[in-house]
Image (cartoon, rainbow, N blue to C red):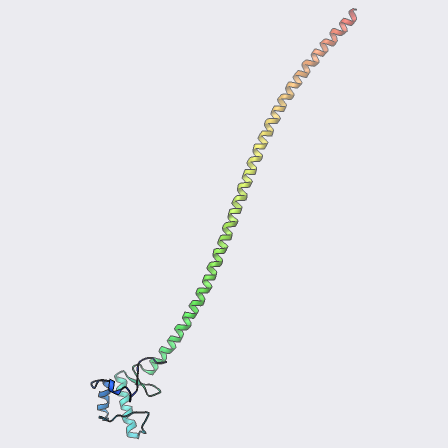
Length: 184
């Protein structure tokens, strides 16, 4: 993968301005107007030294050759580190995506549990209210029954008093009858 613009020493040479560091490096190395293409010529030791000096000069200017002898703006180490960082970033983004999916599932689960807890809470409140209403109904029924018992006790007391009165009347009438029979 390319980390920066690549310049072929043969194709792109005419696009570089003559005042560029490429032209200055060529002038210093003694290349003159001769067009050297590193991948196309056999270098002697002297040419190899000139190439090494040119690479040093280009390196100082911020230009580097890659493994295909293409001119690059970035140092090959920086390019490699950039590629590694890009891969690490991609892995990180993938892991963040997985994390977001997991968190999304967890949030859905918690929301579902919260709804179920709310439903159970409402059922418990309803059951408590029902028990309270049943207790109130029983209390009201108990009061009604106690009132009925009190009424029946009063009626019993009236009947007892009436019975005693009737027993007294019967006794008087029996006594009167007995006296009437004895008088005859």
